[in-house]
Image 1 (cartoon, rainbow, N blue to C red):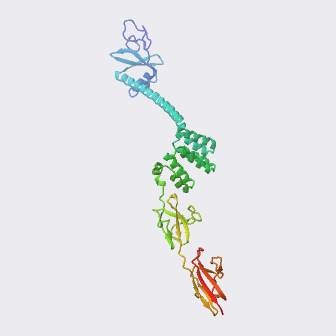
Image 2 (cartoon, one colour):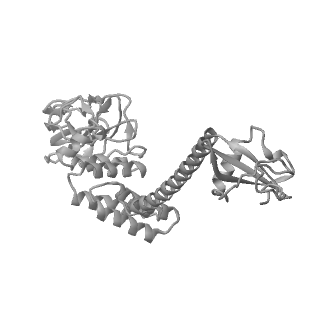
Image 3 (spheres, rainbow, N blue to C red):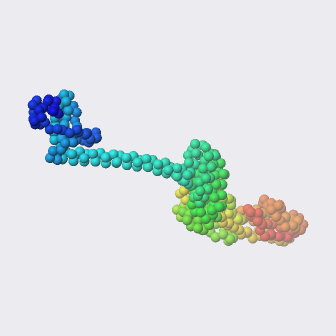
Length: 408
């Protein structure tokens, strides 16, 4: 037979090759394991004396022969010769552990990829669900408004209102679409319609109030809340401003000039004296800084509001005050009734603030009679002289009558 290592012919009785000196044992065919195990075995032996350092040996295989529980590694050189090296069970265990780690790493990689795909699917599904939710539709409406796609924005907000008509966000968004088109009336109509359909909805009422604040229509807030249900007023009490207090009672007729004081808790007060509604900044509206003098006779209407730091006014309060200054008695006329034979002057005593009028024909004088400008001559004959005083309001005093007979 031939030596399996160098190919030299060996006698049948010889146990060693006469050329290479190796044992003439019959080495069965070998089968290599998969590439992964081979590479792992190579790595496990990298720190030891490795046959790879010999340039004559190019191929590494694993032999199936076992001797004493060991496996052998052989390297084939270009000349067909072989060298063997023992692989210990420890190295094999290392290789098996390395293989299991590689498999575990592969499974982990597959799991991570699966989880990533699942996450993408969940995100896409979440986006689809969100885009069709109330919040998503409202957000889309705002985006369309910014893009000036007003018809599409109106449709989006109306769709959101259809989903949840009791929530205020869609109404606010819809009003902003109309405001973007300078249609203040239609913007306000959004809220007036909403509270008409949901009169007890506190959230919609508050959105309505915020709309008034955003559009500088604070003066409308008191009227809105005054007509709201008590439940709404209680919940939105922070927007209800206490009305000013008046120091004078109305319904009383005052006979002297009055001084009216107005008070409010930590708020500014504005008032009018012509019966109109006070409006901050209006020409006929005065900011209260000192007591109001009521010195005109007749009726005077004082209308006042309190305004907080956010320019939210209270409900307007109007009170009517009446002053009737007393008229003086009938005027004093000189001389007294009698018969005279000397030229005589007739005089009327006129108090300050009054005007005197008189007649000589027995008729009662009025503010359309002869105005007294100073002493007048007494006419000859018999004269019935009547005089009256008229104040600044045109109010007449009692009439004084004198009967004169003048015969020179």
